[in-house]
Image 1 (cartoon, rainbow, N blue to C red):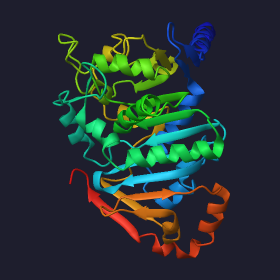
Image 2 (tube, one colour; image 1 turned 180 degrees about the horizontal axis):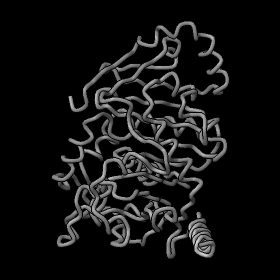
Image 3 (cartoon, helix red, strand yellow; image 1 turned 180 degrees about the vertical axis):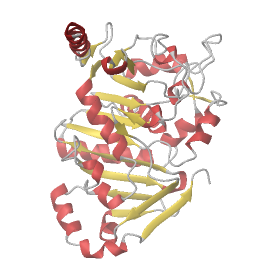
Image 4 (cartoon, helix red, strand yellow; image 1 turned 30 degrees about the vertical axis):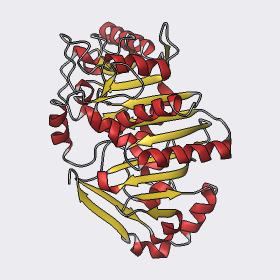
Length: 362
């Protein structure tokens, strides 16, 4: 019996040893996967779902006190009309500008997933021959208040902190917008050292677009988790490789290996195709639960509505357009803003001054 226990311990230690290679470089491509960076960026992708704009803007929310501590938001953009949200700020520990986009909000995620099964390539990507993309994802970034807000904030961040790296992230539909943002910053604004890391991202274009994207934003990682349904959508039809949706590289697939107490999570760096049949495509993507948790971090909204709450003391930093869309921006140090907000703690009863409840899909 003791011998069997010892053997199990040895096997277990070997499995752990095999799984500790956290920084993996992809051959023939400059993409490097770093586990530690992924666990940091997934927290930004989770935090952008916070609906209390006071806590989010001052970075005092419960989700803001772990690996992202010390982050300074420069601009927070909320497109209330379309239920979209993003922020731009500076992460001192990373010495980088971080841009995060919120994914699909509300309990209607099931309806959104069903809808993706039938989505067609329906718009040509500008300036590229034969490249087609998903109109909804493209428009969510390019044709809303998010793009001008993000570009303005990046410009101000560079003026304040110099030409530091830019890291773009997002979960679910937020990952789709993050990809379009990374490409936009590189192609249209000549930004250098742009990297993108997304979690549970759907396909957003065809093979021609994937090739174009990987040329301009090679430092991109798409993290997928177990049987997450969203990376399988819109569907890939291998019988029509030129017409179907096609992922761009590079995928990192998180999945369990081993059995019972000897199981562990492998972080598999997939090939350069974007559609590696030995990665997430090797399983049936049918799980919404796998879509909502990455690296043990819960992703997603807090309720079934598009809802924001904002402290009256924060109104001085914001503008509201005719559609009710909110942009909060600043150049002052985070510590100064935090002191100003804390001095108004007694006015927390005014949190509902701007309180929007919009049903998703209205």
